[in-house]
Length: 247
Image (cartoon, rainbow, N blue to C red; front, side, top):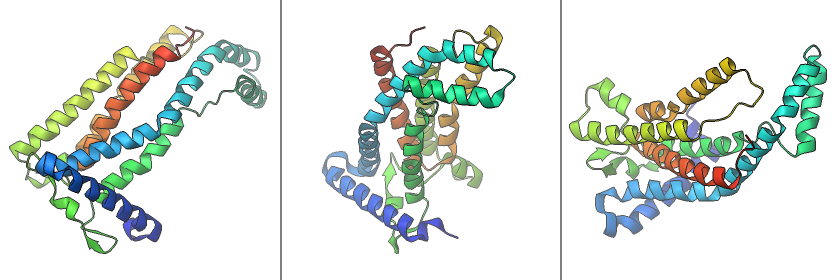
């Protein structure tokens, strides 16, 4: 079954299509052929601006979880042989401290449908029964509907496409490395050193997942990933100063 033909999804895609085409039309006199790409950048900025409250809530939750980490470690030692009691006491601790172990998932869950919509917009020849003119839009001569993996697989990768995708992916990798070095997560003061290093190493690798995804999605979605990664880094740096961890 084609998910894009499902009425709610089709209506959402059509609304997103109209928004992007409207922004591209407004930008056309200024940005020329790059108008659709700039429209995607603006869409990303709008989405991330809307998500600022969730980012603040996440930073506060991270600060709270860091503060309660010693208490959590004490519970784990006390009830290590009673998993059911440990689960109850852990949830009670989070409730008493006004924290949630799942707070960090909210921004990701909200953004996932947006990335999916951008992906589908540049994957379908038709949107809600009409031609998808976005597929004709380009950035530096590269179709916004082209993916790096697809171009390599079909043998149609041009020098222009290689340069554009290379620049996008390289910048995402740079952002991931800055994030890994500057915003290293702290598992907790009571975590054994060896376990802590394993956790930090795994999280460090996960930072580069966005770069891997950018290889397989259309250029339009890769641009969305690039801008949202840049915004996320800047926002986390600011919020880390505003809500520092106690250790």
